Length: 149
Image (cartoon, rainbow, N blue to C red; front, side, top):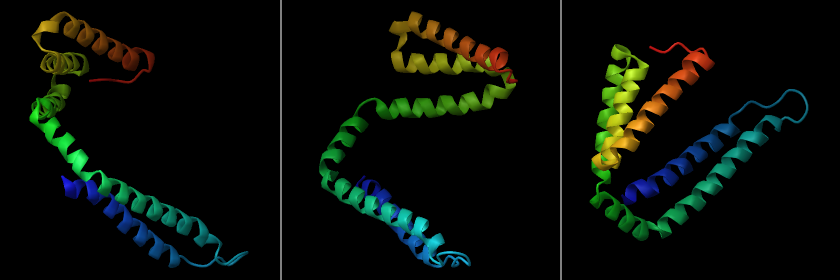
């Protein structure tokens, strides 16, 4: 996890350095200030570099605190919920064209709500599933005129 937390700032530091070097290779202007086209990209590259370095040091200071939070989160039911959500999303994508928007959305959202809320809240799950699916279908098909499968 430490590599991920520090990886993004390092990535943006490298990108900003590449953009900064690339900015100096831009052609000079023929009219007016010859360095005019360089100011904006150089300024943006310097800002990106500054904020990336700042971000790097902030993330570096909070590594140990964040790692404990991540370990606690991964110990609960969160990984199972993420896995079920990914599987349901893949299933939704596979059945979307076969059975259409309304029915596939009802099945996907219903299954997802039952996974998250459990069987105890079955009334709320069904009401939310049916209402959201119908209202989204109505908004796209009728109000916006978008053709849904």
